[in-house]
Amino acid sequence: MINEHLLDLYTDYLIVCPKQTTATGLSALLNEQITHDQVTRMLSGGGIDSKQLWKHVKPMCQEMSSDDAVLIFDDSIQEKPYTDVNGLVSWHFDHTKGGSVKGINFMSALYHSKEMSLPMGVEFIVKDRVASDGEGNKKYKSAKTKNEYYRGMVLQASDNIYFRYVLNDSWYSSSQNMNWVKQHCGVDFIMAIKENRKVALSKQDKEQGHYTSIKSLKLEGCAVSVYVEQLNFPLLVTKQVFKNGDGSTGALYLACSDQNLTFDQITTIYKKRWKVEQYHKSLKSNTAFGKSPTHTINTQISHFIASLIAFVKLERLQVRCNQNHFALKNKIWISATQHAWLSLKQLSTPHAA
Image (cartoon, rainbow, N blue to C red):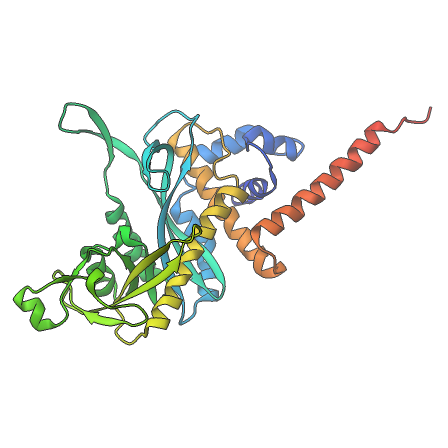
């Protein structure tokens, strides 16, 4: 049984602490009204998991539910370069760096509605199975692939709350995932796809095996109905051209299962996927996600879930105070610095005899 009061104190501590978060640190902050052993037992108990996260966000998700709600999927890596490898902390390929980094690879299902974004599910990639790379070298793999986790998380989310679309990048845009979202879960999707994806321009072309790359189609500014070999329903595909920071241009290809949307509607809805990038940035910067010296898988996962709950608290404060997470943290730190300033003044002032 989770001590809800202690978990509440711990998540507050993750928001206000500017350095490494420890059980002794929280105990000292509370003048030892809570012992560090109590905090350690809570983190090592194994009860702080994705179900506990959903317990915290479920009432808020139900309250903010709307016809325009979306479920956004993405994964990220929290680097832990100085922590021992244990399966949870492992080596993962980071496409932003073009190489492998040591850390925690986690997947999130982010529910976005009415200007709020809440993580309603999370999975951690634990590489605890030994495999061979074909040359006799040992490699560690997860028991489930990211796509298997993805499908399970979509199904679980669709069973618990209403959302209109699933949004994700091209990593999760396989035909198997498209079929799963549309037909098994009964939800539409908008997914980024790669430019070499093959499509047929009509049902007859599909039956005859006539496919072409979407890169060869004139898609800019419009939505074209196409067919994919492994799907028994049509897709709308679009192309959005954008400028990079260095002045070069890039193209984003999108596939949508809702045949009633226009180009502008598809691209506008997909822009909401940026919310998951903001979520990752705030989680790593504002809730001490990577600032725990825990060593076991149980305590590490407990700390990470607590960080997600702390994010939920900041999201709620953001709506209440009309300030973003970083502005809220800055306000907290200014107040803390002012108190530290006064404490210094009191220590520096000679006491009367």
